[in-house]
Image (cartoon, rainbow, N blue to C red; front, top):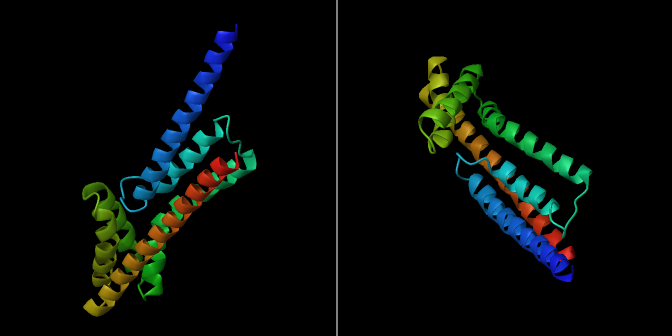
Length: 174
């Protein structure tokens, strides 16, 4: 019985190590996903915290896990709308906003990975031109969409950075 309890303790430790390693990979992939449009960065980084929670080393509260999940959902939704806010902020019209939306989805599905960066800009620019605006006005709206994209990227990196901090801090505290 002594050897069986020793074996079970070893397997738990190995499982913890495996979950921590996979969680670390998720954090790295999540950070990369903030830049590479085809990877959903914050959800992948969130999975690292969930994996760490399932170890014997760290136990997050259900409130923490749910708040982090809510943060991930909000950031993922905002990531699609922030470029439209940029269009508006830089003087774009509803033509530019609709162009931004269409450009975002067209770029996402037809021209990955760069389409997600170029799509909102091109969509807002073309939308403003179709709405009868002059080229310089359309370029300004397109630039607003690009600035919005950059702001969304900064938010995603900040969230993933927070998750990395929480992960490392929880391991250090355990």
